[in-house]
Image (tube, rainbow, N blue to C red; front, side):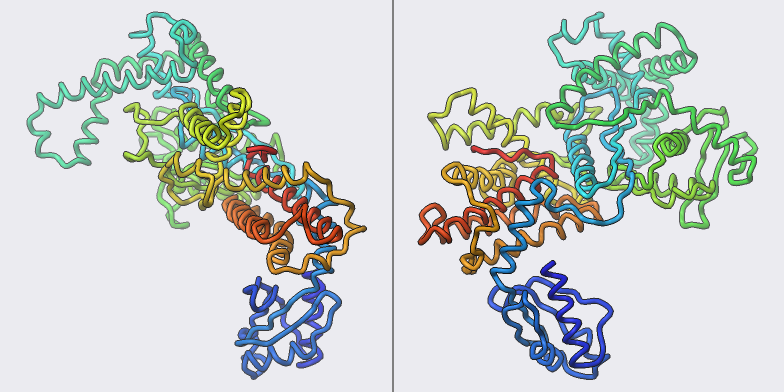
Length: 598
């Protein structure tokens, strides 16, 4: 309301001074020494044929509103200082009244389908999956806060050659053991056999390459192609391909082994998802959907959307929209990956009738989704215009890129365990007398909060170099820093509860530090709206760090419980209560708990 009042006053001042009004008034936060808000008058100079400073001066002279304490012109800017009493009343009353709902926008409500996680069942979740999951959850939380209906789902890649690799290796080296008998978590157990397969294939390839002296003359790209072609010649590669054919033919033994090994993986995934707080409204499985796109391909061929080559393969020509030609069905009639995605997209739209869908998938799949969306549009699906790929960058280990087939990964469970352990060390250092059980409880909250914040604090497209020590730091732009600010406020409010807003004199919040806090609290809904519109949870991270810094600056300068008088004390108690609510709301959007104690 206070922003609207200021904008109305500025529009009135324009009309009074110039008999003209700009199409839009864009207020920005001013530097504290100049005021609270600023309006740049430079964009209006050409229309009004005046200098920006002259425009600002005329506006300042005619500006009038109950919300405005002072207006000044400086360097072509109209600087506006608002009434502290009005600001405090509006902001703090709204936060206390709305509580957990403070920050929600009043925009259009939609049904949004968000796909995230979507792992393969041949290995455990890893660091990249953690980033995917927390990004998908955070974006879903942002959408839900503003009243959208969100359908959270994943497509589990549970079939294909990568799955049969693990199956062949298990039959070769597994000795019929179960994960329980091996003392391993199910997804780790199955993943170990995937790595064994790749090591055996590499051994066969190296032996073969030694018999081919001409390989020494090949480029790295040519050699990689030879290695790929060798898969169909190697003993273990042939075994994996045979297993895949058996599976596709419905062979009973192959299907039973596949179901058993996948069930071990699902049990393992479930444990990790629980730790991350990740959940889904529905799981889709590639084994159930990989053929569903074939009918769409057949119909598109009849309509002339696709074309058939002499070898019977089916293609689409997307060169007219800046893409390439794309095969949609092989010459032997088998489907390719994008065929499955076509069928899945159509099936999900029929099931959920979503307004839009967001795919949270790594940036290396950007071209794939451009092609997928273009094909759906070419097929005439109007809803395809509302499909979006929320791309995210790679996560690097200290020694480089993760490689699952070489076993060079940090799996999700190990990462979670590590950040908890680091948090426990920090907690014991700060609170040596804390009981062991309570120290472990706090370390779980702080460790997971640190991990999530670290991976969300940058734009999604930015690559991340994982640094657990940096993530767990209690100072700087970290999750523990924000959590600590929340816990500090909780400890103060345990001593005394603030009274109702209607009984408080907000004029008592007259210091610069208090004003900065009020303005920062006022901007939370705008930050949430920007983060939602831009699929950018990192904006919430930035906001929370800044709010925590503003609180700490206030707290170091001003007494709360020992304020100079009762009115000031209760005004400050309500102020920090509002800060606590917004910190909790912001952390909740990121999937992070707001602890009462650190």
